[in-house]
Image (cartoon, rainbow, N blue to C red):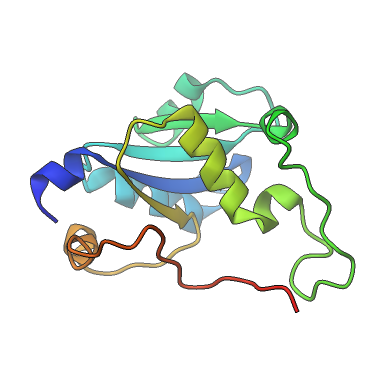
Length: 154
């Protein structure tokens, strides 16, 4: 990826309180630290806060990355607190903030609208190799949205 695109790209990992302590959630915590160590100019942890933690506190726990905190009030304010249909195979038992990943992405965008490009990852992603190289494979793609999995209405 060319340096000018990286400077205008937010690389975001979505996470929550269970990854704050590496003893409790080693994989999620380490994934965040690994991405942070890549030294992206605009790396963020999008943190779903249930406990009133400040961005500074969360950042310290992960070794210093940028943090964008959101909570239920952000979903309510933006009309994102939609129920999951009880017949939906994948999500009837889940919290809508986790199930509707696009609402998490929109929440980050609304709080950080000044980037041209956005990459979102969950904290349980496993990646071995050159992450910047991986992203650079898509630097010439002009599509507005790339996704590895999406649901559709029947």
